[in-house]
Length: 398
Image: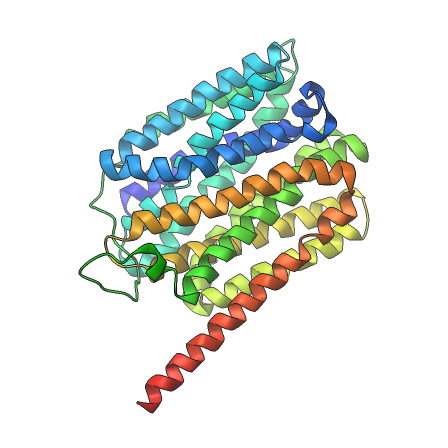
């Protein structure tokens, strides 16, 4: 793999540590600081909303100033967010803590562009492997973030302040790593089926079923993952009274399961194709719901969250690999911006609603809400395959 892919993988390991730390502690700290238990997940939601509203400006800034400057700036912004989070907890100010989450979200929007930068650094045939390799940095973050959260929670007199000071440290390490990133040429499509002298309008690009399979797969992958995972620490720790250490283990295992499959998802794409991989992801999500509904023991949470992480990886990598096949040269930034805006906007809505649903409707109904979305993606993929078959048959008859 080229040097840039390794740099981005290491930077991902540091920068992504912020997300699992906030995912583990956001709701737990939130329920102590929030004026209402229904708002407990608002810090996590603030982070996800920060990602969603920042995608478009971030891609425009990268288009104008290049990726390297924005990558480094994002890591520095995350470091500042860690300091603000520590201050908010120390002052018991819920609003300041939510601001920290929003800034982490803006930085996270920049981190989400690492996978596209990695795919630009390799030959088209290696695009899936490059994207998976960068996501492997999240495997390190899955260990690092929760461990620093648990260790830092008791490091200073005020609980959880030390965790966010550690967050600042690892984000500074990400900024240092990204200083070695080498700016690449202008964005180009990977495996694109389209070649056009003039970039097409967005409605024309969106008229093809395939692009909606890619976008919807990533949306459902991220939204369902966020919906269930955001509610899990609250249900485990505050409702079912599992220990913080057990809750940390479940969330940590979930995040490991999100990124560990990246060791082989690139190979799965090459061998089985994108559609079969995404079907495996939807199957993992379905089994997640069944296991979670079977009981509230530690093993139920652990198995369900591990399968949730696996399903996310298969759907997200599948959508990431499929998306560049839907646009031509010069169309990349606007398609990527739309894709990530929809993905993280949906994730923000799922995260925001998780706190309300878990307190008002309960764990079982929260899980059941996910089923129609799995069915929708299955129907969309069936429509895509049917359209492909019809097009191939029409071409054969010409």
